[in-house]
Image (tube, rainbow, N blue to C red; front, side, top):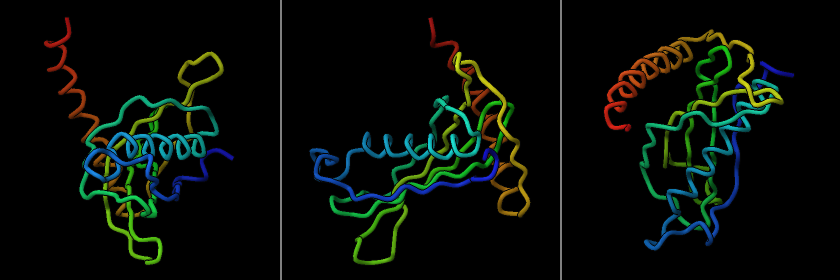
Length: 158
């Protein structure tokens, strides 16, 4: 049922096929995992098919190693009419140990679409706790900053 499941965590092991030439998990693999978690979270919240509209502010904090257990968590932090802003955290660690360290963080915006591919309404998310209010307020500030950056970028598009 839409509007009930706000957070999703995907768990899996980092595999040798995920490694770059430096011997650590490739940033592109991490970005794929982020997109998968974002989709799973947005689809669960909206009850609809969703597409990625934006991924930004990606911070690669620490490397992920082959054999690490990886947890990619997505959480709704703001909803528009058809969009959902999601905070994504990627954590990893030795699967034999319960401790996980933050490896990557970013914001992803997903849009729910109908069968014709047109944006469609999503349930509104209303923060109840101080931490959630702060996340929502941060999402709004980031939205305002993206508008300013978009206006500046127009000068580079010909």
